[in-house]
Image (cartoon, rainbow, N blue to C red):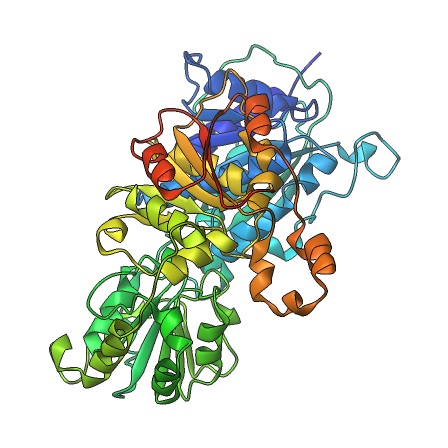
Length: 556
């Protein structure tokens, strides 16, 4: 019996690998068998002659698998090596489980290639098992999708290669385009396979030549040469949100303006950076300074605090650049919204500026220096401080998107700890789901000891991300879990005014889970700490395997 699906799958995998896809995250399933057999060969220690060498990661849970892929792609970005990562699933609900990670990839601009197996045309719409409408299932959250008919006897080589080539090109983005196709994101190939689905013991041929890949995009915030100078004002402010990059610091220093930088901006440093900016904006002196601002420049995607959003909302003049992957979703009152930061923003009409000559910046720095910001001996900010101090230059760390990143934001940059450290968080939609799996992916991509910081609800929400099979590569990853007995982030919101019992049940949602037992069940190392000294000792050496450090803040 002929098996045309097998050579199609080999051609697809070989072309993706040739176009730079190194990592494939695979979930088990029968309909995706042709891809699974091809990847089992390509991902083996000794692949057969002609097969590409790829990194194969097998996961049971599709939702976790998608976030592992997201983490792999984000880790590659942190190393300055942006590349797409592929996820392979069978048909049915397996496909739907990819959606949370796809949504995050869409808003953050992370290149994923979704390879979902499907029934052939004759089995759709007739009640066949494990069959649903997969074509277009991700809607506007993918940059491109295509439905491929089942391979058939007599097909000429090249169809899979063309699909793979275009998928990689679109996933990486084309910087020449001034729309959403100019930013990286997810693409979806819905691949029909007809029985037989097993291996055919065929050979690996070189991928057929197809049209070359268009110019490939990048993450980051590149500087481009559009003639878009900033209006000359004395009292400007630069707000650096998630993914802003070093260019935000350069803009602030070029104009002598204060820089308010979030932890994952990549811009927390330099003489213009106002460390305790959140504490400052909460004071009368800080509000007086904010009221005198003439112009706000937003680079990246700021999402962490209402104080910063209020500053943006009342800006007399607002300029926005590189506002995340959905850069066109900038505030409606912005006078200028640009895909990238123009080179003209990096210079001032006044020529070379000595930051010490900026009276406006000096007022912000003096007001910040006058603050008495104390970090409690034991609490979220104390854990955040110890976590940051345990990192070394060149480290990449993942931060949970709820209370943990806000604790870091309020802590402000630590001069020694922040230098040369890359912080990553899933801030595209700021969800807590998939955080453990994302951390695993980041650690695998970085290939060296890596750490993550998250709250207990975030950890429990994705505790299945700890499940890694005995034949799979395990990262050297330490997850620091701040356990304060539930989602205490809601205590700082208006919901806290409700009756305490209601707040606890429907917002704080204490889980009562025994983290030690969970870790034991997954075969992951565990350590409990209850004070700052014990935490410092637990973080003193880099992780050598997967481990969890529970920083318990109170008894529960």
